[in-house]
Every structure is written in C-alpha cells, then in structure tokens.
Amino acid sequence: MIAFANGRYTIQGPVTLDTAPVLLEDAKKQFQGSDILVDFSGVTQADSSAVGLMLEWTRDASTQGRHIRFANFTENLKTLIALYELEQLIPAA
Image (cartoon, rainbow, N blue to C red; front, side, top):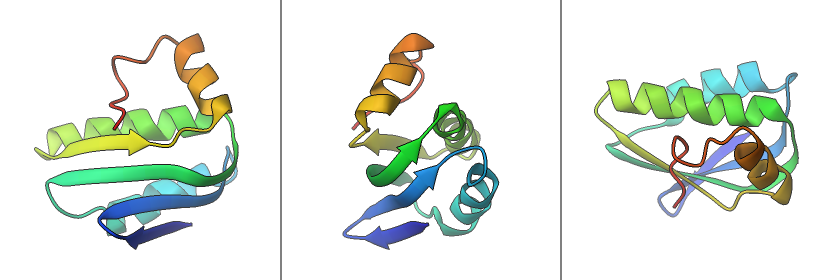
C-alpha cells in the first residue's frame, strides 16, 4: 500500500476507514529520513480518513524533528482539506 521509489513514498489503492490502520502502521515502519515526501497519485479512493492520516503523519514528523510534505492530492482530498479548513496544517509539496 506504500511504495518507495525516487525519494518519495507513494500511497497506492484506497485510503479509507478500512485501510487507514494498515497505512498508519506501514508508514511507521517505512518513513525514513529527515525529509519525507508522500505522493497520493496512486490513491484510487479516499475519505476523511486520508485527511486524518495526513494530520497524524504531520504531527509524528514534527515530534521527531522531520519535515513531511504531501503531493498529488486527488480532487476529493483537495475538497476535504478545504472543507475542514486544513490547508495551513497539511504541508503540500
């Protein structure tokens, strides 16, 4: 569900309430380094759980002294981020 290539972590498949716990654990094991780029171009379906994951990953990165950014949001994710007024809290690449 999370693939690493060319310096970025690409989320693949759905990011929903059902998959969020697995993605959270995968990220804890896989995210390495001080600058993390998470690419959402492989997301096939997303709900508000995706926004929750991004907030959690951002908080975790901050507490560990890491920098995290997110790229290639689906239109649905862009809408959810705007709806919840989280543009300032979710660092876009």
